[in-house]
Length: 84
Picture 1 (tube, rainbow, N blue to C red):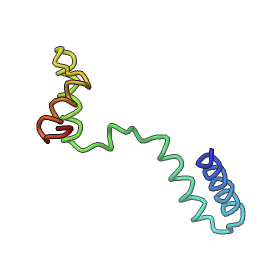
Picture 2 (picture 1 turned 180 degrees about the horizontal axis):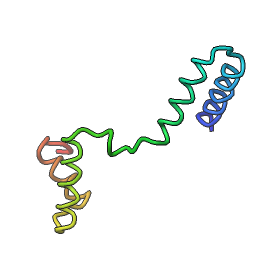
Picture 3 (picture 1 turned 60 degrees about the vertical axis):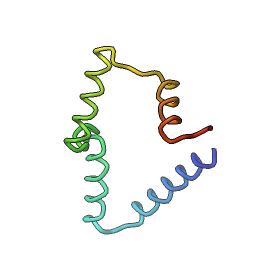
Picture 4 (picture 1 turned 180 degrees about the vertical axis):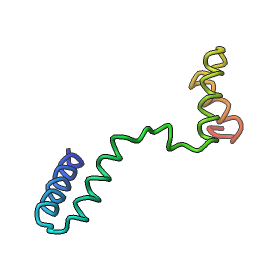
């Protein structure tokens, strides 16, 4: 709940700063940032390698090449000699 309060406090602080500014350039920049946030697709912000890795994972999942969480944990524990 504290995190939500901090977010609300930050919003109010920003609103106050915006209301108190007399600099149109600042307002234009704030507006541009907020509008850009709505226009950005997270996929476009990924690197080519990240996109390829995600696409490969989807392809493997579609082909039934899946491992359970338990299997992955078992492999990692064996590889790194954990819980022995």
